[in-house]
Length: 363
Image 1 (cartoon, rainbow, N blue to C red):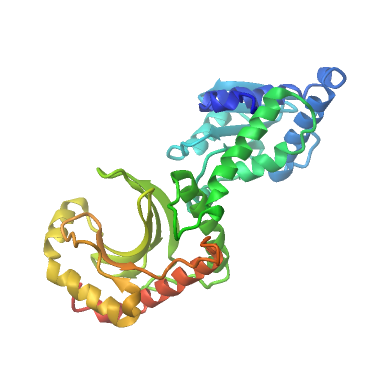
Image 2: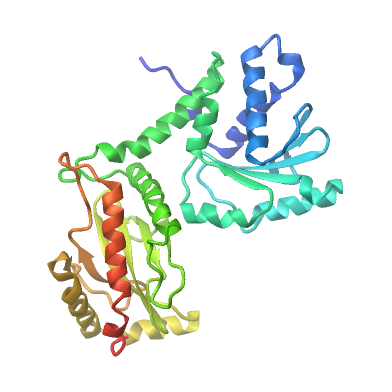
């Protein structure tokens, strides 16, 4: 029988704050003999954070503050190093939240800015692009669930609270990664499995972008890939999208994966971009005939691999022009081959971007 796990119930960020402070508390020398495993791990954890932040001093004294200046956790090490921990589970960072905290520390303690560091600690999921956008911060690192598991696997004691935490994170990771075991010829992905797939697609597209194999947009500028949850009256879906794509003055075409527990597809979207006051008027300009003509052009280059959506919605905020039927690459067991699927989508994206002259008299 599987025993109850504290962290199946303690699911809020305040609970995780408390847990991290609990682990850091064992850093102090007084626990070295009475709780050697916890003391050893807490010191390992702090030193690992130092290593990732490139802080080249030996941590000897640790002070913790919770919710001080509205900061989740503030670590003050050796009376001179200030580490802001922004702790998240499913939420994301607010607008320049970490930079605002750094300013508060600077004003409160009059400390040299070079001694203020920040750690974005997240056990939930977040897109690669969202995380990369945070790298503009100085003295900053992030730890995601995989990183955190790899750190906590160094604990070799029998503290049930720490063991529960590790087991809960591994359970979350297994739920996400179970997409690898789904026969997509027979089954649909769950919400958690969709997120796991999108996490992996980030890892597949990243080297393509780094190696210059991810296409630039039709103006020669950088494209990007990102994913997010999209709410709608029918229950919403997770979108994995590729922008900016094939661009015109007021519209752009781009591929987008749409997935929920009922459907899983790659589509080409046509969206207006404009000032808010022009948006409604732009939507009115696009009628059914234009969408049919767009689809005809796409079929000319993609052939039978692209089909008409169930219905055209020219007045909606985003217009689906075509649906691909050959974008997924499955192995003999019906499991998705993420690398080959990413390469397949990448090639379709390149073709789409090459069609700028084809649509110039239509858009």
